[in-house]
Image (cartoon, rainbow, N blue to C red; front, side, top):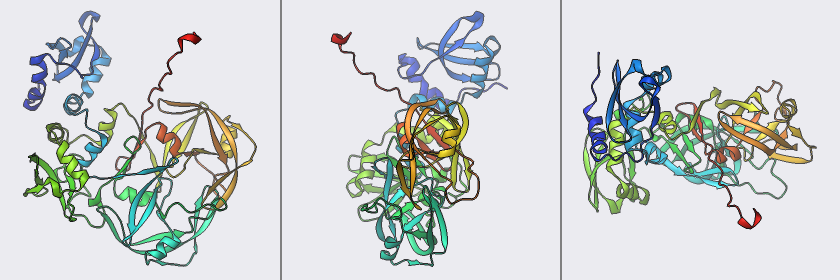
Length: 469
C-alpha cells in the first residue's frame, strides 16, 4: 500500500520549495533512468516510487525500479525524522539535544587530558575524576573521613596501571552530582596518593567510576567538555517510568530547570516573553517562572530558546543519541561491556586488536608484550608510570599506525608497561585507549546505548610562504 507524505513534513519543506531556498541541504547523487545522475534529496517515498527534491527547488517522482540497487537500499533505510532533523534542527548542539531529553549537564575541567567535575559526598564538596576505566567508584580515604563516612577494614584489593593496592568498603549516606543523588551506598576507599611521584599532591578527592555512570545513562562529550547525567535514574527519581522509558517517550522529553532559591522544575518551554518563561511540566501542569529567578544557565537557555528546539521535540523524539551523532558525521562503535569496563575493536600496525576505553588514563598506554608482538618500536624501560599500585617501569613506544573505524593515527609516541602486573589471568586487550586520543578524536561515550563516537577533523594546513616556493 502506498504511503502519503505526512502533513508535518509537507509544512516543514514547503517553505523551501516555494522559495527555492535549498541552502544547507545535503544532496546525494542518484543514478536515474538511463544512467543519468540526479543530485537531489529524498522528500518522500512509498512502495513503488520516490519523490526527490532537486537543487532547482523542483520535485520529481522516480519509480524505484528505475534506480540502482544501491539507491534503492539507501531509500529503503531513509527515515523522515532524520530528514527533518537534518534540514531543520542541524544547528542544535549535543548539549541542547541531551538536555531536551531530561539530562543534566556538567562542565568538566581538563587537567592535562584527564577530566574532572564537582560532586558532594555526604554534603561535602569534592573533586571527582571521570574514569571509564574504573569499574567501581573510589574515594580517597582522607576525603571519606572528612565527609564523616565510616571506612571499613582494608581487606579488599583493587588494581591499577602499576599493580594492586588495598581498599576498604565505606558506608556512604549520600553521594550527589547536581540533581542525581544516591543514598546508603557502599563504595570502596583507598589511598589515591599511592604511587604518586615523590612530593606530588593528590589532585582528586574521588573517582567517578563506571558503576554510577552506567546507572545514570552518562554521556561524556569531549567536544563540548561536558558530562550529561540523567538524575531521574538515581535514588531520588522525580519522574515515574524513566527507568524503562525508550527514546522519544513523553516522560523523558523534558528539561531540568533550576531557580536561584533551589526550586527544580521538569518540563519544557512552551512560550516566553523577555521576562517570563511558560513551562509545561511533566504531568501537564503549566507554570510561569520569571527568567530573572532562574540560575544563569537556565536563564540563558530560555533566552536562546527557539522554535527549532520545539520542532526537534515534536518531530524527532524517537531518534536515539546514536542517530543524532551519526547525523553529525560521527563514526559509531558498539562497545563490549565486560563487567563495568568497555572495550572497542581496532587495529595496531594493521593487526586486529581490542582496546579498553579509559578516560582516566591521561595518555594511551599499551601492554608491553602486546606492543612488541604487534610491531611497535619499544624503547628501554627508563620511564615510569604512576597510579594505583605504585609506580612501574615503562618504555617510550612508537605506534606506526592505530585505527578505530575510519580514524587513523600514525607515528605516535606513547608509553608501554606491564599492564598485567599482579594478575594471574591473561590480558584479552592490547592496552588503554586513553584520554589523549579521545580528546583528539572528539569522542562521545554513551552508556545507555553502549557506544563510542569518534570524528577525525582535517588538520589545518599552514599557509605556504611564497618566498620559500
